[in-house]
Length: 283
Image (cartoon, rainbow, N blue to C red; front, side, top):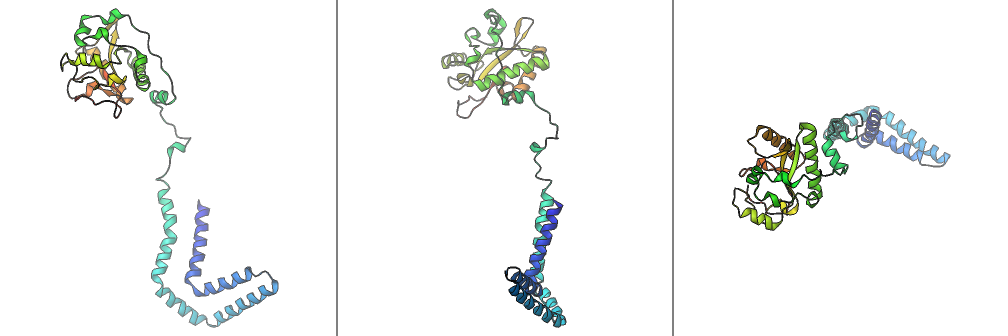
């Protein structure tokens, strides 16, 4: 870096001297003619001409100095511009050197790795948990909280692959970090089932057929398993904390959580939104 700056100054100074100072320009021309000559005698003649020019220049030293000073005064703005140009590029390089450091190329920097994102980027395929017995979903509490839950689809393979991996990653992190077992209550939902739920009123859903991400396998409703039974009521302090952890993990993986909706809060609902997939119902 330092050697490059020194070479730049030497070359730039020489070029500016040739451009701005006539005596230097004359000597440079004589030297150039002697360099590119090719014959010894020719070189001597050129060098002799250069010597005569040098002698004439020495004979007129006083007048040359006066002329040079007047030339410098007359060319003061050009000189100022030349020196500014001379300093501009090195100064810019020194100033910008610290602004354009790309940490990605510094192998000595230690970085924290988000295992969840790394798993997605590395293409790790998480496996869905084994299905739970149907009777575990046949409780009165669950029937009130989730009407028609008995006919809901809990087939992981019907979910969008990207969404499925993110949701499974939420399940795994929820268990590893908070000791909570999550349960898929409903994933893919047919347009007919969506219309049937919408017919039950806005307290159940505000989305008509084809207005829900469930129809594209991009949404899921989730609850939690505690001591062999499903807990879904947000009034339960344990379940409330579990939903908060669940929502935070889902949002960290790019999912939208129903606990953030303005109306009809749905703490168990998450969805992966895609432009043009559906016309979402107002929340």
